[in-house]
Amino acid sequence: MPDTIAVCGANKFPFDDRISASVTRSSFQLTPSRMTSTDPHHIWHPYSALLSRQPVYCVESAHGVRLRLDDGRELIDGMSSWWCVIHGYNHPVMNAALTAQMHKVSHVMFGGLTHAPAIELTEQLLRIVPPGLQSVFYSDSGSVAVEVALKMAVQYWHAKGQPQRQRFVSLRGGYHGDTIGAMSVCDPDTGMHGLFRDVLQKNIFAPQPHCRFGEPCSPQDIQPLTEILETQSNTIAAVILEPIVQGAGGMWFYSADYLAQVRELCTRFNVLLIADEIATGFGRTGALFACAHADISPDILCIGKALTGGYLTLAATLTTREVSDTIDQGEPGVFMHGPTFMANPLACTAAIASIKLLLDSPWQANIARIEHALEQGLAPCRDLDNVQELRVLGAIGVVEMKQAVDMKSITRAFVEAGVWVRPFGRLVYLMPPYVIKDVDLEKLTRAVTLVLARTG
Ligand SMILES: *Cc1c(COP(=O)(O)O)cnc(C)c1O
Image (tube, rainbow, N blue to C red; front, side):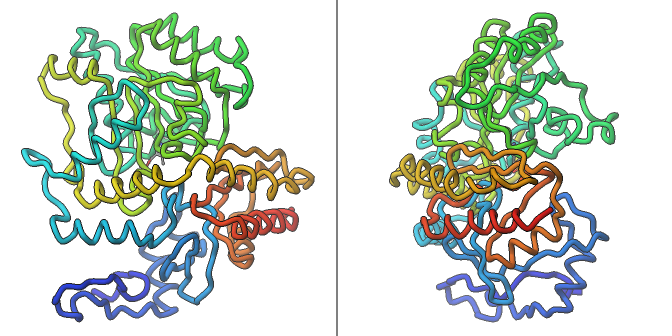
């Protein structure tokens, strides 16, 4: 029943091959009845119920910071498609790089084979990541990069003759992905540990740091983690955290001093530190990597999301020579992971082009410009009765409401105001593509202010 396979709009990719047009150009017509039958009845969306009939909007195409819906409406994207699309959609440089690579090789297995995009990307990453990280493992999504990081830590301690070090410490309010291992280090409440009790490893949670970004860390803030490490470090493989910005677990910005102290504690108690920069990496917080705010290097780093500028799915787990050498020298003498799509050449090519675009741009000034515009544009939200607080860091603006928003009505209001903003719980937040112009930033923040003023 090929009719039930829904793709939006016609395939407009600029194929220049002599392949027959009937093969490359889909004849699929997205009729209204298909939108209301196939999608809600057969396709899951993130954290959705098939039966809930939450409205979804169909994107026909996208360009720059604008999403074009199938009914012709255009929305300014305030989400960068969840941190990813930093250079905007349909970028000519990215398109050209991918088209060229596609004509060489789109995918090839990475077992026993290598290719220029993987090598070039690795050289590029090693130049920009926090110092000391030397060994790179590519995978296909952020959650898998976290799984790989956890496995690296376990294998490291196994090779060191301390196989009892199997547990992880993470922070309340943290988010590290949706797979079983990653879930076991997510906040136990938002990660629904009760529901998955019997399949999740029992890890250890330190309280969320209360000290804010820009503030020093109080002794009370670091004390619980200190105690955990003092008393249990011989069973702990690693501490895992999102440096500076806790993303999907609460959009919370915390003290760089706290992060620096966590690094010191990990060194003192001989526990590995895993920095999950899947959301924060590639400039979002004003530093290329958020670890730089505290001038620290982790033992293991996870990156993903903006790595390919949002073009393709790719993630990486980086570690020190010490960790990778130790794993190599232990049993079974290899690192035990190997995804089918490891270091996919197209994805690596997208990453190379995206990083080059970023580094060739005045990205720091640009993030500072967006930060300023978010501060200014969202400032009126501070006076709204239903708003708890406004916080801005780098190209991230968060309006924390007093009560959870009604997703259905607020989403419709945003769409009607010409913007794409997707809140969760009490959090309405913006993280626009870095290429957004001042006038569009103004439209975006004005829409948020107006919609929130009318809400509740
Ligand atoms: C998004 C995210 C992940 C998971 O990445 P996926 O690509 O969705 O699997 C992990 N950690 C952090 C900090 C993230 O923001």
